[in-house]
Image (cartoon, rainbow, N blue to C red; front, side):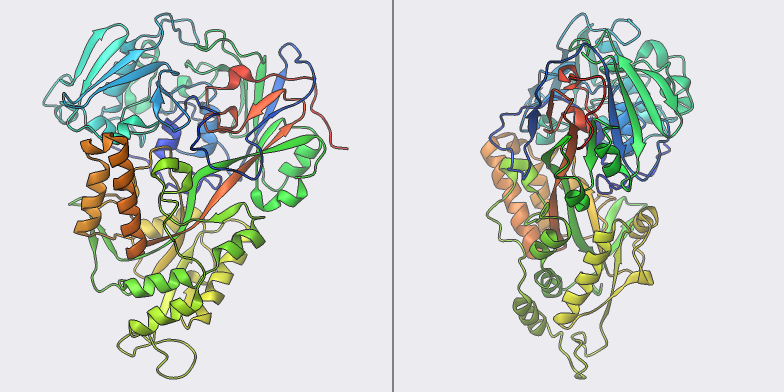
Length: 597
């Protein structure tokens, strides 16, 4: 089965994880788990709402769109934001990101029987072209994505966990035995294993759905090229329909009268891709109503009179990790190299203690990048270990750890040799992003030198993002450690990033204890909330101690809202995320955007 590359880069740079793209759903603004943010999460502007109107939305990105609109194939942030206007996930979710009944369907779990019952939440839903929406569309999508002609990246273990899927893919069965249609609104998925991830948006329940009446006549291998995937002929379950497209640049949408939550109050939405370099001037001029803003430019727009800045904690984190092995393509597992240069826990911990993320976040990112204490970030609420000490700036502690491990300055040049007395040079790779990031990377090198470590920037400069992740994927032997970023999605299970078989475990760290702790998180026992929290915290403690990946930052993301937008919220699942669940609430109070004074 052909797969496109899907680097899970930091949101706002280029790409998002598969789970983020799946996790379009409702939100709860009253969750007690929601972390505090610097800026308000919601805003109501004065003025009476006008009838209809066009909202102008800026997708702030340096890249263009590929033109794909169907979420079964989109694999980057720009495409998924466009696609989120016209496509819908099957499921909604609450303020703790757990599946509920606010979407097209709900899920009932039979843990002992290993069954998932998916039931539509309404019996009169329609596609945007007026055709009836039934459970057959969902069943069709599952089978079609298992086709050998599928070219996307979304066919994964949430599909292969269905009983009979392996035989269906192999061609030894003509149907999927684990799919049991009950009626036009209900299907039972018999699965091999029940995992707590099934409870979360973007977790282990297939959530894609496409119109069978359209795609049954299109070979799966031709989905990407189909006009139904790229033009105004698109048929979806989202709040809008496509009206006009300017290839790679913008899409204009009109309200979908068949939207299952009710026709949006707006007549239309025009989405443009706008450069981070020009977005501030565009917002100042009132040309756009909503835009996710660059945090490092906050000072240039925070006081504009025509906008309100809202904030939310992003489901992303920055980290530093190490090249500790390789990925065995044949065995599909990570293989750790016990002799790797960075396979010394004291060395890794010292590297963590030597950097001051608090100071860097405040100086370079206006305090919106905050020190992360764990690989399970505070975005995840109850399963995040807020009491984990994390690695705070302590250069003396770093020096002690290096001394204990035998990393000492043998020749008196101010730089430490390795425990064998040999010259120690550590090659550090980082991806090219913003000017603030360039400053951060140089500061890292300075801090490490201050504790006696000779760390050199690999290639002498930061690396273009796709090339950077190509190098990590291949475990370039010239890279000893690197600074990366993950978009986590809404499912907190870290197995897909740090598990023994995870292709995206670029560190290749593997241990029996790590595997056992990850299995506990994914166990049936973790369906119990208390056990679930305990298992997550045990893994976080272990990851902290082993320091195979050092979390550096989690961050607040900001959205600027023009004052002609009556109401807006920045919770996950809101319109600012390209989701389908809140657009029915959006109204305007004037025909044109308010201009800054």
